[in-house]
Length: 285
Image (cartoon, rainbow, N blue to C red; front, top):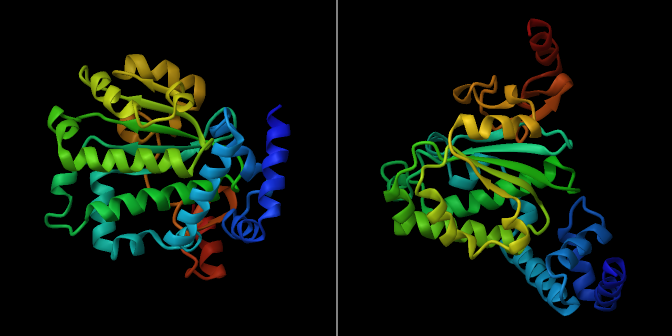
């Protein structure tokens, strides 16, 4: 039945030459069939709703220049290296490895993220942060070759009630949750919220209304290491966690930022480094 509806959606898209051209322009490395199937699964109750969601997504991608954004260096999203550094200090993040199913695992630390302080004195605005979330999603899509899903670890260690009640923080959270739901359907493999304070379940209840029901079932809210340790260990090697959480990973934008490229054995270098320097670096390592 799902495949039948996907075939019907494909017929409708192919019958609209303008829409077909737009889909082929924005889907990047994803196959036409896989692109359509994600919307069918996001709107399983109605083919017309799936088509409407797809059309809105394609329009958004064209108007917002998402294909171009996906190839933009991270610092350019914020307008400079200083702003990017300030954001990374507030929200350390990065790809830390792959889970047992081969999906990339991205870590995001939200404990020090305070939206009301972001612009002082760093110059990081709410619009920058929302745009960066779109960039991050696009870079995660690139990491999976535009096929499949990824796993997310959200660390809320140190999060205070004031953060959860802040209007600026709430606006940021609402914007990224709604964007993820509207434009990245079926990309969420699993979400682990770790080091959650007691009040966080209530806060999540407010956020959950913007999250598709199917995605909500993929979210686990876990307290301290005694709770999240065994569960995360079933999903991926604990050594992949950041050093602060007992792992061996130093967080960087390697594997995310297109201004960095991968070389042998999962090492990353700046493309400005010559081949000779790369070989020397590999020998030294």
